[in-house]
Length: 399
Ligand code: ATP
Image 1 (cartoon, protein in one colour):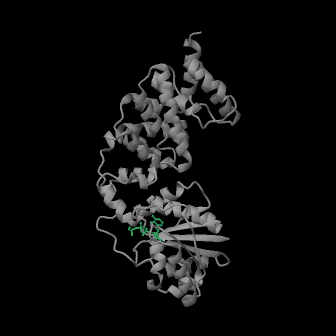
Image 2 (cartoon, helix red, strand yellow):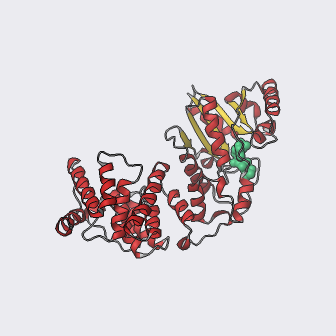
Image 3 (cartoon, protein in one colour):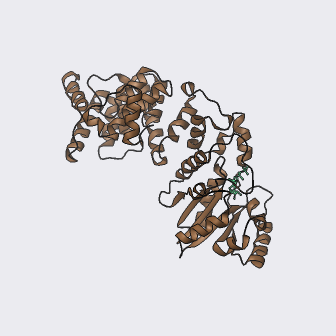
């Protein structure tokens, strides 16, 4: 197996890291890539007020996840668990022990590649791993990198490779920290990493979470879930706004409900129960066992209490999994947007989309009936509120 190792301070991780990593993976034909955030970097002092190593690790995990290569891209806490400064030679020795038969490739930008002779134990590094270098700013010429490659092979027996990136991402974490302080720099970050920075108030970014713009609210929500769910969340937002427009509901409320509806999707049962406890939600017997059912309740609680959304949004998120008797227009919209957003492709989705824009309650009835059928087939108990929603609709629906 060919394994890439990408070390750094990642304070914060940015698109320069991700884009170079992604292209290097292809260029080198890597089977796996491991990002290794440094606990105490040997080359530089962490500026005062930097987030803890754990927070940098979490940001890196969010950033790496946006590459959408689960199982292939990992983030390791090995340097965080080691005492003292984080030397690459130690990291490679440890990885060599873990992967005795595999080919290790140490990935780095031109700045690091050119300074490698000054690192601790360069000969050990070159013996344990091959080196892949890429430009990180316009002045980093291929010629200079090739020259350094030859020098490292002559001096340390290194095997090196210069990776051509199709484009430079002209940013460093240092510049980014300055930009963030001034309320700029978002364009160099994956949205979810920016959301994490917002939620934790890092790098001098001070946001009132109860009064965020739609863009910042989206960033926060995406930062709370795995990247594989991002497209769905954005799809629900888009569909909810479209449905609101069609049926004369408040489009902004629909948008915000869509953005936040799944923000607690990946919490553990314990985390859900803690949020319920904190905000006075009493889960019933079925919910107590099911994060799937609880995520709508806890998502609603955070939408209202953490992100300052109003009661209409609260209830629309609250009921988006089970439905209930006599739903409000916004509740129906979020429930159905979740069902028919553009990424859904189950059998019958086209028919349901048509119905939702022709007769909202007919769409709702179809959605509820399909859910019940699906749950029955899978032997999952039907929540009483879903039954309630169906009965109410059958009784009251006109036409
Ligand atoms: P700082 O500004 O704090 O020095 P940095 O942006 O250089 O941070 P690090 O985490 O120190 O980021 O760098 C980790 C690795 O990523 C290094 O090998 C570095 O050369 C590389 N790298 C950083 N920024 C870029 C970029 N924009 N393009 C390509 N590689 C980059």
